[in-house]
Image (cartoon, rainbow, N blue to C red; front, side):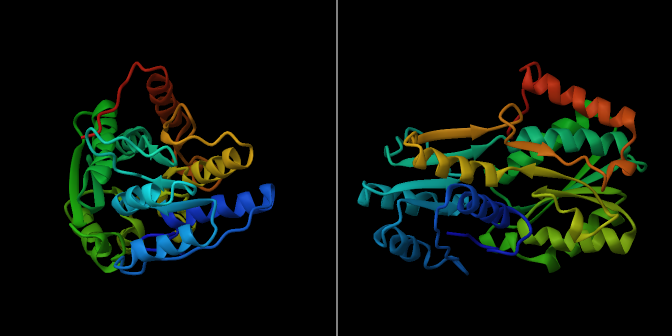
Length: 300
């Protein structure tokens, strides 16, 4: 079940769908997908999947947290997985629910370091979607990476809103992107779903660079995307399905960071001309420090 933004967001939801397609191809599973639209019928639609014979039901996004928690208890024979589940303090998960979580701050640290090493203006930007702890993790990691690479670089931060629609408002994204570029930023990292497509438009208009999120977003604005901080949602979806098929599925919390190859950044033939070898080497060195535990990236 996809959340706000839905299929075609070139980001989070599409990454989850890629995991389903891979499982269909490699494991022979069949699947059904639904979208929440505005989100008002999230629980009713998920109930439909749980009652309709599904062995494993995915909620793609933190907004499913409360509904999936309730349904997992109501349907103990069905397994549930929630991408970006928000665990409440002292809350125990039902045994048939797995929370798929990511260390977004670690991947964000690396693209922050990259931006700080490449900025020509001494200013970089961040555009967040909904102002919530999850997106603050992206900001915190990015900020820490910028500071680690060059403490003199200034970071400009803006958010699109405080409701779920902040993840699907490209017009607002363009407005915020233009504002940050006009304030002197020459590289902006967005963590805002399809709102970020507006940030890319702003980059194109201003002849500046942007950093994509969740999936490789190079194709959205070729030549203007420095890199993307990838969050391998497709890996978590595929792994959950494979574990179910192999009889190894377990509830609880699964966390995917740099060490688990759950997050990372894109460096390939499409963008390597923008990234000198010396800069790549410095970012790789930061990654090694994080994987080894010598750098612990903050989450807020």
